Image (cartoon, helix red, strand yellow):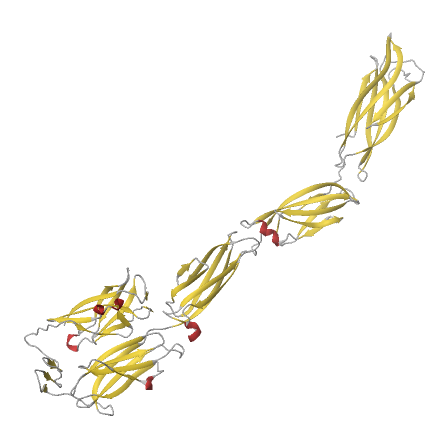
Length: 589
């Protein structure tokens, strides 16, 4: 690019024909340059030409031809202008222009014996480009945040249209505007063009117009970050899969199970890639799931975190109110001979059953009922009595039930405490009236301290001191299985039983709970009925095998009952209804 130029040809050894041009002005609006040009004859020290006759000349600039006549006579060391003019040249639409020119001059002279006719030459010139397209300046930004676009214009009459493109999305910032400072907010929706990253590229195109004619375009590319506010959303719902919460107004410890349903979605094209939920120290990775039985009481918090395809997270939490719960428990049970008013009398014709028990209230909504079954020891079936006066009492201390009992018979008693979920039973024996000794009227049967009842049996209701030792042998005797338990696989061979050999007692059984419950350090009665003379003097604890790798503690207690506690491996676990709880326990008396 230049503002001037020239081309020369030799005429004689001392003379030169020169064409020269220079830019005199440019029009941005018209996209033109105006040049002035000259055709000159330049002589040296011996270049004098003597000629006064008319000669023809021709000049062509950018396709426009000029012509005329002149004279070529010139003195030594002189520059003579033979022709001159101006030409306006239109540039290309992008503001650039290279033009061509040619020239010729008639001489028709003889110089130093040489005949000289017409001399001609040509050349080209590249004009300075005319800046016409507006340019755009913009900085990197953030989607959803306003920023300034700056426009540089080269003529105040020009207008510009600015558009943008981001992936498959596009839009218009302004149309044929004249403002040079433009506020623009990249739409948040552009985030959908990158569902896995933290930014997008935005390409602006600025088109310059003169009137309705497009002059040209420029582009500018920036990076826009996706703001931290563009993250997934999450919510969760929690319900009791067992339905207890609807009845009791809260979840029940050891019984309720949390049914968790998570609703989550990405934003602007992102998708949910991971779920993480924690509840009671356990982690779950599904969008919906049901936990095991809730092991703790109070407020149980469920925390959820979801992660989308951009690696961004959202959290939600819910709280479940859990009521503390333990299966019904009979804390005390005893039977005494009495009169009709319940007054203790060793010769009374009635039996008084004294008991204490506890049933979890659950805000007063838990059922509490009590039943006593009694029969003569020799009878095969029980008579059941509902203790209606204690119905609805969740805590009973010193409860009393009196019933007529033949003086010559002992009785088996079973007390059952029942709530909305399970029952717990406890057994006891009521003796016949007290006698120093007694014998059956028919057959061999003797008793000391009570009435003889059973043939071929020496029945002693006194403490015995055997100064020379005593040996006791017995067959397997079936125990009373608690109402909350059943023999494993409903096989009668698995019913708890005991056997005494000399001073060694063995208890055996395989049981399962009728209703699943969460184990703890507290004991739960499995069976009862070990006679007083075969009971241990202190509680005997044994570690026994459960289902799989689970272990549990079996306790033979001083009251003649067998109890279970601590089911699990490393922590208290729920005892399922198909649990295999086997025990074979031996102790000395």
